[in-house]
Image 1 (cartoon, rainbow, N blue to C red):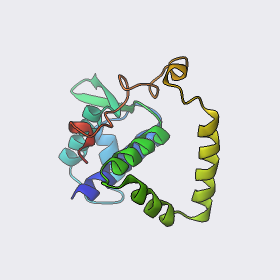
Image 2: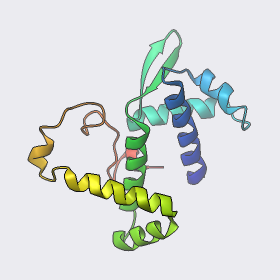
Image 3: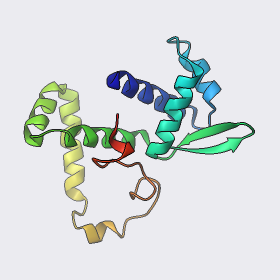
Image 4: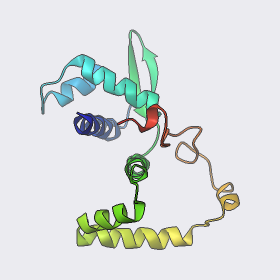
Amino acid sequence: MVRQLGELENAIMTRVWQWNRPVTVREVLLDLRSERDIAYTTVMTVLDKLHRKGWLRRERAGRAYRYEPVSSREAYTAALMNDAWATSDNPAAALVHFFGLMSPEQREALRDALRVAALSPSDPAAADSRPSGPESGPESGPDTGGTGSGSAR
């Protein structure tokens, strides 16, 4: 069930990013129904959960809400990976297994990312001088910690 919920969250987030505009529950529902039989209340619950986790903002539009993403697909993916890694009793072993699952192209992308990360300042004081935005701080981004509703998947 947890895996299915995560897959549904990802399917919904993908649609919201693709449309690149505020969307209603009904719009997401109609699009999802082209792939699977799903109830309106299920879509509404998942959108609400993504809102409570901090991934979507919502604004009332009549009797409904319009939802839009708070941050990028890349920030969302990184937070999911961080959440998964945080559940391991042995993070180093988890990484070794994860790397073993990667394709050669993914390992090359990892090498590129590590080179970019090495160029970024690692001093937290230096990070304070970076521009702020929806992806720059915990006050506007999703809860990716180990407690609370943000880590339940």
